[in-house]
Image 1 (spheres, one colour):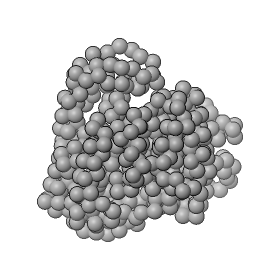
Image 2 (cartoon, helix red, strand yellow):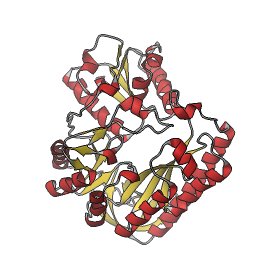
Image 3 (cartoon, helix red, strand yellow):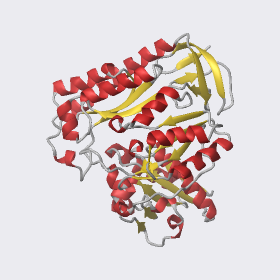
Image 4 (cartoon, helix red, strand yellow):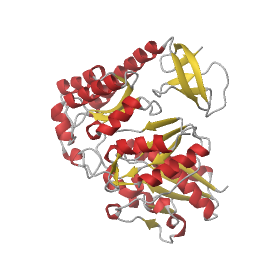
Length: 406
């Protein structure tokens, strides 16, 4: 065995896991497992620790190294686990120090990180679409969120470095590239914001077939980004929005920078510019002080924004965040509200799927007989196809969660 990387959480972690694999090969590391953790919820941390224990049982001779946001935020809890050999921070994990450090805990002050260096990868293991990190960190301090303490403040990669990475991936055969980061709509480097970066990528890498955004904060979407959505067919018509709630008072207590009407207006504006767009969103159920009427406004937001997919998060108090000190909603109420939100999301997805029946769609094939439309809707293929191909097909039906190709 060489090095296995177990990845939890976001697309940014997926990208960085590829960097970890590359650095491990360069260092000739063998018999090691790197667990790249997520800290967004308490459940994510528990899952990482369960995985560490399982790995040690199955591979008792392997060295286990823990990194990622959970390790950055609370390194000592992982260092105390008998299964763990070393703990490395988020800055350490993407450079040679991950393999050179002698100390058990190598976690620097993440707030001291002020710049990004290019760490290009030629492929992303197990994925038919490639990820390019354009930004890291976050300057905002939402009251529920621990991630800035795991990632540091916002910093962006120079446009030339981003374009070079996209060009390399396109040359390696990737038809679709996803730009990722912690808060990508805050991207700013050398006077370039996200919208201009999008336009430059599409202009300078003509061989790239599809360019996709990861999660965005709609309040930060600039005019050039909206213009690109309206005019660039290679920019995919799918936006995943960090909405979090539909009630203005809860949004203020979350320290979000938008209000309910801002979210509704943004979705309507984008839909006018790009009628085929599909929206997903993150929504938290049971945020502290959330009353029944406040929760209903989050439910109603699904239809008012025309959302097609939801990522529902039952509120999880993260130690060290202001929301953890606020009056908490009873856990059974949180779970029930999360269930109702998921049902609402499932109904919204079914409506979207039903509206796709009979349509002609251009899809990117994945493994396992699945493909994705430009709106990121999954399609079950009727005949086998190699992953990474672009196909034109007709939608014959759906099974409640996926489209079915004719």
